[in-house]
Image (cartoon, rainbow, N blue to C red; front, side, top):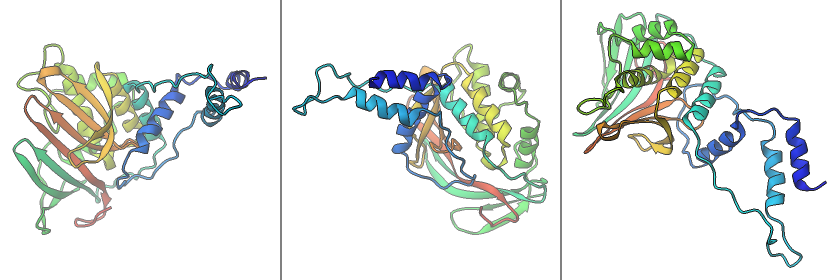
Length: 307
């Protein structure tokens, strides 16, 4: 039995996984050049699809056969260029990882913590840390000067306590979730993509894109099933593509999920290449680039604490 017969026999015993083996191999290549970043969610084992290592070994033997003199055989198969990964495949992998991620259920008396940076067209703004008590009573802010200021919470629909309630009420079916975002009566976005207006027919997609990113950036608040639904809904937006080795405003490398609107602008969500959590957003216009990054996020018991 030659190597290819052996490979075929091995494959016969393994069910197909919609080409997820090739997706996994390509993502491993992306991760190889990825710089580790500090994570506040417990890591989960990377998913494997059974035959990857054995198949790679057999194909490697078959693809490079040597003659007795040591030179490559004339019938050796040429190397096959890696296929680009698709948004559907990558975001489905992200959803599967999310469902296996252990998270802590926040309590009303706890605080949502986040450290952010902003890189606007007019120049970088100071990095800042903020704490929000989840019962909506108080908030705290610490800027570059290092002084912690505690005040009454700002009242409004964007308070993290309100965001947590909204997350818990979101549907987990990705089609229903996408429809929910497309028909919302308000805009939720950290940075607007379109300048000055979105191309005709893309308005609802852009609204859904912005809302998904708004909730994803509240990393520590998102329950696993809602995170999975967010990834899957994002994959259903037309023209969403993957950019390998994308960088956020702070130079961290990850997987870019891109919505390209041509001359109107281009938005990129950067996801960690290890566990797919949200790192930041970058918007590229005709003559400028703006970016916002989440440098740290978590649930703590009092202001001033970090996860």
